[in-house]
Image (cartoon, rainbow, N blue to C red; front, side):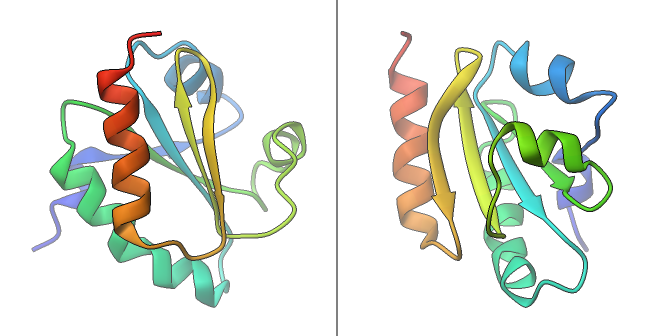
Length: 115
């Protein structure tokens, strides 16, 4: 059973600003594309994080092929790229496959940092 769909946010050009930039919670965005093997490697990490932090942060996925303007805005040059947004701005950017522990450390910092 996959609980990730309960917490997964599919981000698009239409909802990105409201769901990410205007969010009162930290938001972890997975910038990905179909056929990207490293992106597939990150998916289980993202699922785990979404489940572990459900209700504390938002976790969303943005397909860069379907939403190229957002990818351009945030200068996504390689995928997967994860961007952790906090207080309506970029808190940390992860390029490539990263250890889950590193991502969780950044998330915990946003949860303890109210600024």
